[in-house]
Length: 473
View 1 (cartoon, rainbow, N blue to C red):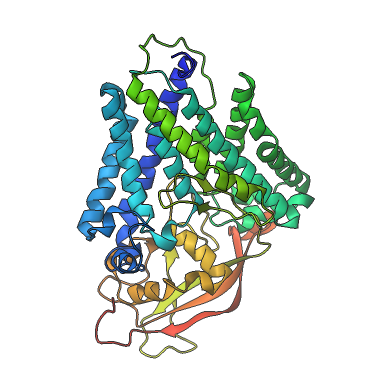
View 2: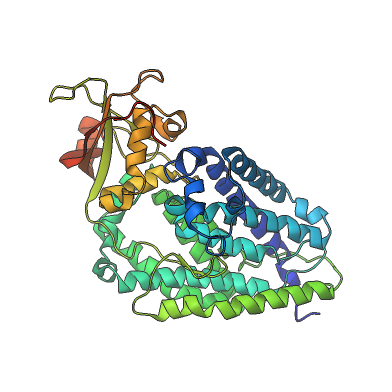
C-alpha cells in the first residue's frame, strides 16, 4: 500500500494533531466560560428559542434533542477534557478505530455548539476548525502511516483559505490594490493587540510592503503547496511567518493559529519514520470514500472563489464539511466604538453621574493599553465592534444586553472587565454613546500616556430602564 501511505510525514502528523488539539481546547474553553450569558437559557440569544424555529436538518446539534445550561456545560467541559487528552497523545495509545472515534468526539461536540451559536458563532474560524477537525479523524495514529490523500486535502483547505482571502481583497476594497489598506487597518481592526499602536505608527512605505507581501503570500505562494518538497515546506513556512506577523499585530481569536496548524500539515520534518504494517483494508476504504465525498463537495467553494460575487465565511452544508473563507474584503478608515454607561440617578439629567462599563478587549478608557487575548475569543467584544459599524448588526442582542446590565446579571458581568456598580446596587438607567477613536501620535502618547484619543459622535441608545416589575427573559 505504498501509494496510500506517506511515511515521511509521520512527525508532521504528530505535530499537526497536537497543535489542532490545542486549538480545540481553546475553543471549548471559550464556549464553557461564556455560553450562559450569550446563548444560555437566559442568554442574549437563547438556544431553546433557536431550536424551536430551526429544524435539525438545517442545524444538526445535540441540543436539538435536549437543552439545559447544565447539559451544555457538560458538553463544553467534555470537549475540553477530550481535547486535553488528545493534546497529551491519548489517541496514539489506542487501537486505530478507537483513536479515530476519539477525534470524532470534539468535532461532533463543537458542531453541536456552532450550529446553535447563532450570531455569536458566525465567524469563519468556527467552520474552519470543524472542516479541519473532521479531516483529522482520518489521519490515523501510530498504527498506520499518514494517508497521502488526507494530507493533500489539508493542503487543499489551506489553499482555499489563503487564495480565497487574497481574491476577496483584490475584488473588494480599492485600498488593497493601491497597497494603502494598512494605513488604517491596524487602527480599525476589530480588536487591537498590545503592539497594534506600534504597527499603526510604522512608516507608510513599510505599510505598502506589508500589503504587497500579503498579496504574494495569499495569491502566489498557495500554488507552491502542491509542488514537490522542499518547495511545499518553504511555502508553508512563508505562510506561518505571515500568520505570526498577524498574531503580533492584533487579536484575531484562533484564526491565525488554525491557519498555522493547517500549514504545519505541509511541512516535512527531517526524521526517520518508524516501520509500521500496511493500513487495514477497512481503513483504506473509509479514508478513500470520505476523501471522494469531500472532493465532490469541493466544487461549491471553488465556484464561489471563481465568481465575481465571491462571498466570505459561508458553509455549504450543515455539517460544515466544506466552506468558503476570507476576511477584510473592505477596510474601515475610521474606528467607532460604542461606550456603554449606567447611572444610579432616579431621573437622568445633564449632571448625572454616568459611569462607564469596561470591556475586556475592546477599546474603552483611552489610557488603557490593549491586551493580548487571542487565541481566546472574546465574543461580546467582537460583536460590539460590529455594533459600532451599524446598529443593524446588534438588533437581535443589544437590547437584551442592556436589560442584563440593568439587572446586574452575574453571568453577563463576567463577560466584562469591570462593572462600575456593586453587585447589590444595579444602575437605574443604562445608555450607549458612539465615539470615534484614533491612535494617538508619538507626541500625544508621551505627553498624556493615552494610546487612544476619542471624540463624541452621537447618542447610540438613549437612557433606558427596566419597565416591568421583574426581569424579562
